[in-house]
Length: 380
Image (tube, rainbow, N blue to C red):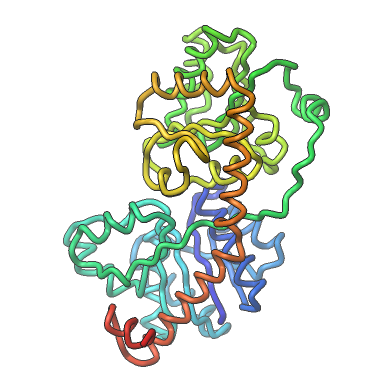
């Protein structure tokens, strides 16, 4: 197959879906498919994809349903005889649907890491005309979409994320401290992600304040960058814990930082299945996360991590303190977490599932069939 991955992310943002796009590209390339990537001019996505050796295009996305931009995209699709276009945002799916006016024989997949398709008349009238299917990483999103009543079960495929499991695991903590200029203090509690309202880093700081009351030597790493950087720094000052909070900014290589943490938290308002938790678990880090999106699909609470009620700072504080007090429990959770990730979240496993789904859709389209009945006829 020839596959084009479209991602109209703002120029210098790197998110979980960007990672998914890159891992999908790598996984399908390993399975001998030809992969192309398209994004905004000078975006981090196109820059990373180019460095990874993919043929990459800088595209104009513009307003929804832009005919000229759709025609430009169709020329790229025709040139490379693209079979499948996978779009990150609804804007990407719309652009691909315009391109299909000029060049018909390809399928369009919407990748839904978050519930970005809404139950209103616009989507009811247009979405299934634009997209041939949806890939999501969580049953929670699939259930939400099915509740709309106009998407069939087989239109949405749940495929867990895949990450690179072949990563270094042996780190020297002294070297890490020197590289990142970290104090020699324990415990180390970390949070990873863009500094945007979705991540609710203010609640992480509330937890940090509570923990500091019992463990004055604790330090708290905030790894990421975003529009709330200054407000988060100010809130740490307001709480009187700024001397314990280290703003590490955007980091290209997180492996050593995950390994350096004793515990990793997630305080997001909403998520799909968070890559940061998958990555932290791979490094045997015990995680404590709010019950949002597909978190419970990833974590079996008490065995591979801890899940607490959404927005419940007190519960998160309590569970984190319990982990701080017990090396044995942290190590047990970490080992179980790593085993779970290695068994279920490899790039190879994800790419195999994506490949199967894409071939199924292509067979369905070539046979002129749509919907669940077509899928059943293929399986039978």
